[in-house]
Length: 400
Image 1: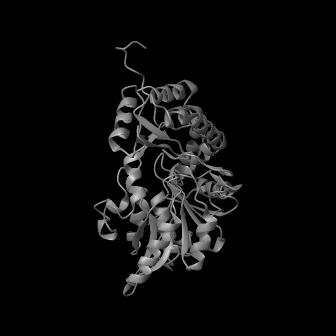
Image 2: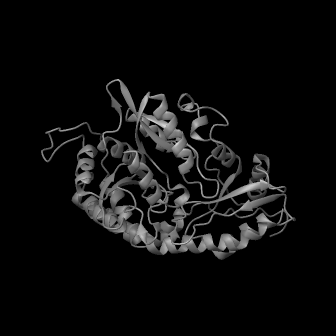
Image 3: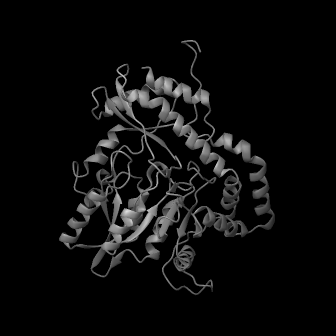
């Protein structure tokens, strides 16, 4: 490439390459839906739920209209919300997407924001314990549930969290919107918590061509309540309404797309893991290099943990090892000039967002998440990123 020749842009997520690979199977599946004409809750949804349950480690799966609806339905199934003169409190990490917090308010409960650990972006049990004691001492809301988030595809260590929650009689709903397909200690996401929710937004490791999601339940009885809520709270009789529900059904076309994608999902997960290993091997040297104005820290899984690598997210510091939004943004601009897209997930923690400010304690209250918002940057991550693109990205980071 000559100095005047523009760099070809690397896709951040390459759904087109996946579509080309799967087009015959996707067309066949969609054609079957068009032939039978059951566009909502057709036979593809039943088939998909069976497959999702298998992928989730033998649990009961309920397909729904989105990952956000999955979270809301899970809260409703547990009866979390407003109780006469008092609202339930639900503990959520502040370093996450807004859906984790907004569904708490939609259910009538109060979100209580908790910090995360700087090394893996996952909920910090010490911060959780502190926030729990604050809520309990205030006596305004009733601690009721916690929603840990498997950020960027890395599953939360559920056993310590489950022990902590059980000792305080709290429910646990795992927000696995980014981690379907991941494992911890040989167990699949879906079986690690009593209730797990996930998303099939197109950019997710397993995504459809619109919105979609699922609720995965260890107990079949819970799944039956979730099914009822998904369809307006009805019982076996469509017009026998036994509880408050929502319109949370998945359409058959999206189920057809997901069934086609599941045929290669294991291969795509393996490709994501190989890419993450390649990034890590190449970029660890930049963490101590004196040739760049930035230092980068690569994400690690730890023994016995397999991420789904929804995102590959670096922490960026300046040359002295200090958090610096300016340095992170300089790296982003440097990569952009080379046709390498990046993203920041997330530029502002939830407790500092205008919609949630009244539920938090302001700047400085959750310092790790506030620091991460200035440091994180996500690189291209998808199963179709080839070695040449990987080399180009890593070389650009190592050479300012």
